[in-house]
Image (tube, rainbow, N blue to C red; front, side):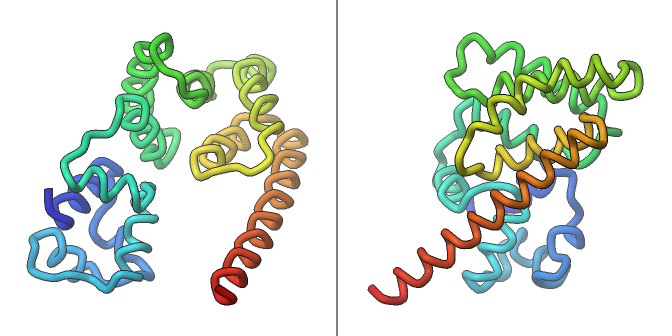
Length: 196
């Protein structure tokens, strides 16, 4: 699969328009030209496009070269493509796949996805305590992780929507502290790279 086809497929899977993908990075026309194989974008622009698509550069390249994502990783990518809670049909489909994968998977995220999706699907029908009981185990585990990755942050973002205001505020404060420390670590890595 060439780069343009890959970008087109990922963009469609995310439900994004060319304009949404291009916003503040490049033009809609450039995205169209890349998807049709008429144009290549500068490396730094491609990195931003790939990040906006919610996939790591290594996964992008691996998939582009013909390797398939594992069922676990494909499910995580699909989960991360949910843009809002109105996509109930999509959430139910992902939840069904996650339940099928749960026993076979070694990734902790599959269980997290099940809990979060169950809560999001029922956000208008369950009371706050019921929703909290569904996702509290997820937060209890994630709160012990020292450095969160992209998937952790996506799940935490969904937890903020589900928890009551005070709990969401406490989680938000921890999230900001974690992100600040991650920025400091990245600064030191950049400095180390410059010195080498």
